[in-house]
Length: 387
Image 1 (tube, rainbow, N blue to C red):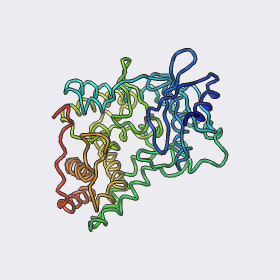
Image 2: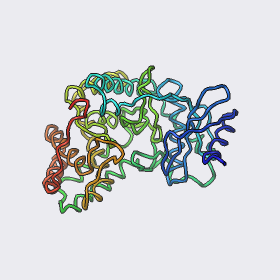
Image 3: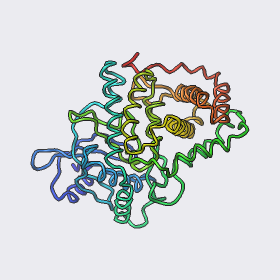
Image 4: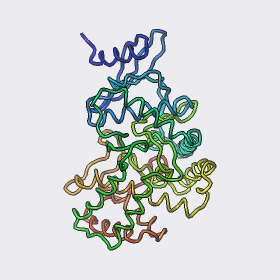
């Protein structure tokens, strides 16, 4: 009987120039298939194939380029081979190891704290190691895109978290996150919430962090706590489908919120999150001295947090109008969609009130909270490691 992944293995073998066998599924979805395959020498590699999804071409280009840039420095698997026409990647196998999410959900408080800080430091070290290499990434993206199947690519660019395909930094056009922010501006009306006066000006200020800026860092893109492995050699990122250079604040907000685009969201103790954020900031400020200024840092992270919160509304609010659902039915514990939305708004209200520079957005968040009190969503608890 032919193995269901035989065609993928054949493509990967040809790209690698060596026979692969015994594929074992590591992950699969309607977008990708990820396999662990044996090599003739007795080792293993990981093969990732992008299936016929609308953003397959963009995701392949982003991941191949991101791995080629970051892999050699030890921040993720090394890219061993690629077939752009078939959208298949072969990379080193980092083995089986827990993720940051595993320790936050099932570990001890001390293990989770250490892992979170190590994760933040690794994000910072990656930013430092790749500083000034945006042109190199653009060249890699152009090469992989040109080698892909003719006419198969959609709008050029990386796919953002939650499947938001859009333009990357090296192509013209508005970034996918900016489009999500604009889309979210009309969503409060679904709850009968009117736009406060001055909202357009506040949104324009938020949109500024989604475009080019003076402090741009390389990021795997979707740095959620389950998109990494805590290996004996350190944290390694394993999802580069949205890899790009973007403003540093978009990654910093992951620590502050926490974890802007993930299902795995609970509260972090303030001192734990603060220490991790400080560790990340110390590293990136070594490349961008302006980030040492508290006002600059806080204003940028605050705007990034708004952008990510509005982004979440674009895929969570409509289904939450009629029913609530778990953010991950396959994992326990997991927050519900309504619980996550209200937590984001509650947390953001405090951030905006403290900043006092986006008054219309602060009023909008208060109105959203009042309009959804009837949801009776439970308060967001701490991660189980800190519970």
